Image (cartoon, rainbow, N blue to C red):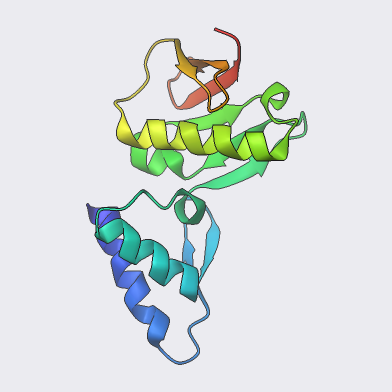
Amino acid sequence: PIAQEAVALAARFCSLPGFVAAVWHPSRNWIGAAYLASAAAGWSEGGVFPAHALVGLIQLADGSIQSEGLGFFTGQDLRIEAELLADPAEAEKITSRLVDYCIGSDRVDAPMDLMGPDGRMLRVMPSSNGRMLRVWGGG
């Protein structure tokens, strides 16, 4: 609720002259004024969590991606292994599904399997310190 209010407050600045973008520090995302206003309105009216605005994705040297800022909300970020990312459209769906799952669920403290958007099973395993969820195909 506090983050939701912070985003709503930032969105109120969107109509000010010269306002171009806001920065969401947990993910280091710059959010354009129009998108921020839309995302904040939708979320405050009971819509979906605005993941594209508030969660960043970093491509790592091995081809995997890691979320940045999801841990601000859930205490855990994601690392999606490269084997799941060959098709960019499918990678987007997998990432969206996982972020949505993490936002709407309790902390993941044990390995688990989730159904991916294409019906393929995804294996989710917390790191030893519990701050990262590693995801790859299988399960």
